[in-house]
Length: 188
Image 1 (cartoon, rainbow, N blue to C red):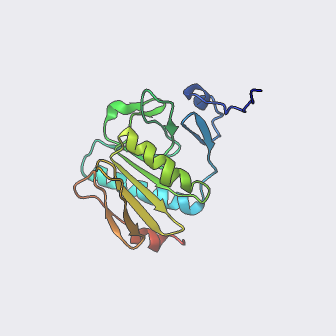
Image 2: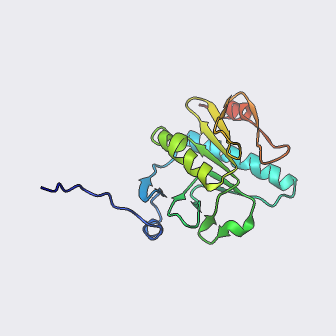
Image 3: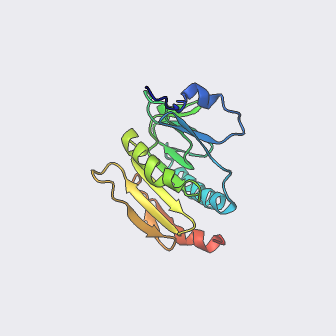
């Protein structure tokens, strides 16, 4: 006797773009992952990082663009994966579309929320590495830690930092983010 197994529905890019505007979600491996609204601390860190990166790019008359979530990133043209990183830095303007970005951003920063840590540390790390993202930072407000992955290297070994460190962005010659400034401005 054949046994019937319930099959998971596989979602598509069309399903993702047909979600209501007020729904935050990502499409990874055909599955939709819903996201809760970010916390105040999450938003304060996001705002600080966006400001620091934008000030640097403007001071250098740089061509890269910085986008905070919600901002749809279709990592690879031939896949249905669409993510909404907390921060996406895109230096190739040809990747920008009316819907967001098609292709791997140069630099992605994710700020960990208690309910999504596995996504950031495991699922997205592999997704970003396979798509060609050059640099990936995982910022954990609760652990006051930052894990930096230089994804162009052969081994995915992170450099671990704390909220007391000044961290160099590898995609730029002289951009450093001083996380002690964040710790001094935010009640963690």
